[in-house]
Length: 417
Image 1 (cartoon, rainbow, N blue to C red):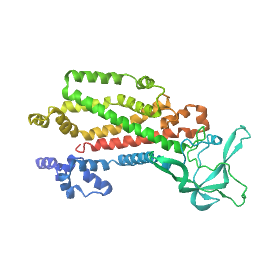
Image 2: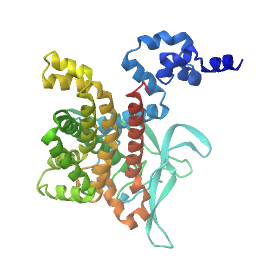
Image 3: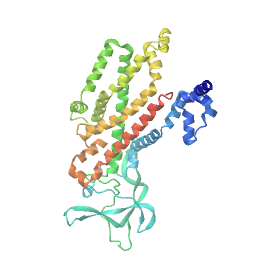
Image 4: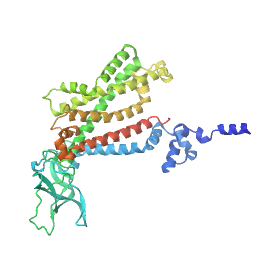
């Protein structure tokens, strides 16, 4: 009896020996959580015939935080692409009287009655009798309804299409009957995230700043991707003196502290350069520093693959070195490269923000999240206007979303484990 029992214990069920078990029970686990797929016993054939891309997709959709991160990243880049339309004002439009104006709340009810459309109250200024300082106050006798697709500051979308329509703005003021027509709020504006020291809308400037910060992350990672794959591939494929030389260069770059290295490279940029040149200069600087980690990963892959049977077969078949690298080696782990590149984007964004915050990178009138945070170095200004730190909140949200997305892509890149 004991022998029969031990034999029974060691017997595996069909589900355990199926491809679904080897791939982390892709479909079965999903069906238990959400019912999106059939049970494994009824759907094994789909796993047998599934392509690698299908397997990766099934693995990715199981990572809920990666889905959330991907949605947030897509929304952020859409905001950056259509910044002129989404922002209610021109980023350089200012009003000195609105210096450090506080954020305005959106309301739907006035005196307990639903108004049908959202609105903001007017802003007035009054002197505080205790501090003798002029302070902003909400004037609830005047309401400014929020209108959509309204006329505003003219702009050129993507530098091509002229337009003056904005997603939202404010309409004509509505006065309380008890206040009379003479009651007029001095400032007819909508500052959802407050104003800076020159009275410029922070919401507008944060939207415009996303263009620089998000694009530097993409372009910098693209350049790092090229440097890392090329130099890491040469190091791992050929070995020898080239391998030693490239690895010593990588070790030297990684041994130097980041901020002093940034300072030295940023100081080399000419002071008379235009904003566009400085932008691309900072992007190249960040990519020259960020390629080392990817190069190490590519080198390790090439070292482990160059003696594999399919690589040797390609050599015996007469394939050239470039064909072997581009058609056989790189595609075999390209999904891992994409995941690694996605995880590198947050580091690029943080690097640009740090450089600009320290005054070593982009400078006004260029608008980026790092440039906007420069004003928060003044503690007195932050005490008076804590909303100056809001660009940092958007940096945190972007970095977290990209990290979640990168984690999901990294897990999906190898669906068989």
